[in-house]
Image (cartoon, rainbow over all chains, first blue to last red; front, side):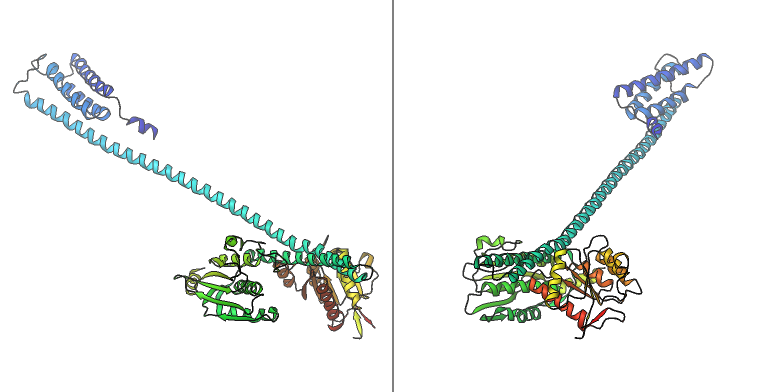
Amino acid sequence: MAYWSDQFQRVQSPILRYGFAIASVAVAVAIGLALRAYQFRDVELPVLALVIGLVTWYAGIGPAVLAVLLSTTAFDYLFVEPLYTLYVSASDLPYFLVFVLAAVIVATFSAVRRRIEDNLRHARDRLQIELEQRQEHEAKIRKLNQELNLRAAELAVANKELEAFAYSVSHDLRAPLRHLVGYSELLQKHAPNSLDDKSQRYIQTILESGKRMGNLIDDLLAFSRIGRTESRTTAVDLQQLVKEVVSEIGPQTKGQDISWKIGALPVCYGDRSLLKLVVVNLLSNAVKFSGTRRPAKIEIGSVDGNEDKFEIFVRDNGVGFDMQYVNKLFGVFQRLHRADEFEGTGIGLATVQRIVHRHGGMVRAEGAVDQGATFYFSLPKAELPAKRTANAP
Amino acid sequence: MSELRRILIVEDDPRDVELTLTALDEHKLANEVVITRDGKEALDYLYCREQFASRPEENPAVILLDLKLPKVDGLEVLQQIRSDERLKMIPVVVLTSSHEEKDLLATYQLGVNAYVVKPVDFHEFVNAVKELGMFWAIINQPPPGSAKKVL
């Protein structure tokens, strides 16, 4: 390939090209003269034609024209009678014209052939470049794939670690806590008379803190489980779900005067148990934070957001919150109220957000201090994801 | 309630053992309890090996099995019990700290009879252990060949 390439590499410098033309004609003339000296007649014409072809091939059209002119002149001067004059007799004219014509034809063929060769070479070069680019791309893709695999492996490892961490928390953190609470309880029972009121209160505090810690761990584990468990998606009738939750948390409202208002709610698409957790958390919050109201008003309804999503809201007339802290509402263990005002671990809304995000929805909240709060979450409509599952493998 | 059947507890943590025994004792269920401190000891007991070589022949009426155990863990003990012709009928109750889904799956796949998470709250813990003791040592009819004591 390299040989082929070198063989047909055209000379670039114009001086060299024209020089080559002149030198070639000179050599051809010399050969013709030398051969004539040895009595070989009429050889100079093919030699000159050959030289013109060569010049056309290696040096291009310009030098070829020069070579044709030079060789015609030299031929006339050196080989055509009368010798050593540029005179062309009428009888020699056809012979002369034949030579020029032959030279032009040779040059033309050579030039055409050259052009074809050039085109071929260019085509080959282009292909070569394309091939290289393709190989480069392939290498790039391979590299990206490798990186992706590596990243996936890293993620899998991180996930495993996280799982092991949660497992360990679940097993190992609860045991000492259980002992703490258990033995405090035993102490309280064992020595009720030897402990004064202060000591009793201390033990009570230990017990309460232990239980609180237990709740925190349980909530945190439940929260981490949302991300780890597979969700089972079905059509969920939110109206029915909300009614179910309301009747379930009814007994926990401790005779609180609540007026429930449940609007028309759509059927959505998602994991029923996870969506129930969302509703339970939001309704429990509404009940909790409107505990001081007589009556507490809790409204659940839906807004048709846009074509593929709708928004559900839960509104209460409770203590509300300062909009300044709205971005803290959905954080893990973020609380806007002191523990002695309202109990809770601060994970409910984080759970809500996580579940809604997992369903491809959004959460937001509106409120004002002492003027109630409204929590919104959006969910994809039932028909659309149903289509999506039809395409899913 | 004419008889109290033997309970085998497999638990490595001495505090958990004490709390469990306290809970059983409160309801007069503790006198037919055998404690083993890891999976190997539990299997030694079940196969009458080493320090249990001279124990009475009968199988316990129920095994309260912790999952995280030194040497041989709870899952392996359960697997061994379920794959042995002489032991596979013994009711096994997992009594553990966690309710991780993979533990639930694994134990139920191995044919556990019940899965109980030890509550952090002591009253709940006592209640859970009491219920377990009442049910398995008194109410439930164990498979033939289980140890019993006539009261």
